Image (cartoon, rainbow, N blue to C red):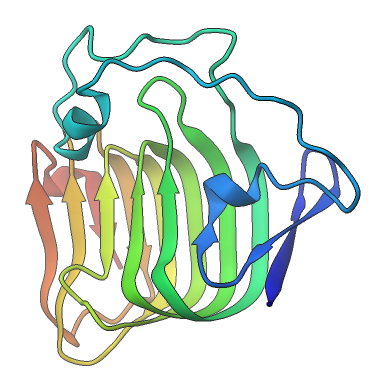
Length: 201
């Protein structure tokens, strides 16, 4: 069994997780050796929360809002990762009322069935990442997130869709040094997202 490790920049502790899925939400919870996780009380959701979040239309009253039990994930750095055989290259999902924040992922070669999938995130940086995916429609799927940076992202030839961007709370996505010529379609906008939020250089 193989693990990859990163440093939590807040506590300066090493965190390790299984290479079969680079999942930031799981990695942030993992303890150092010989530590025991404290019991974490989960926030309460109404039944339609995640269905509504998936389709990018959040209506007042569909989640309980911030409480003392709302988890906070932020300030995570992951570097130099090789992954083969995951279901998704990168999967990040947090809450509408408390985004995962300030995550930097760089220098990775990731082979999986699907590419990058994340929602409800703020301040995420992807730098120098090679995505080798079986499914390419899309390679990167973004929902209701903001202040995102994609630099030097490479992917398969003859890709169907490079980026799918959805949600009426999308904001500031910068795509740089990323060749879009290998994709049949560069960007698809859904559920209230617009091209005004995206810059490509």
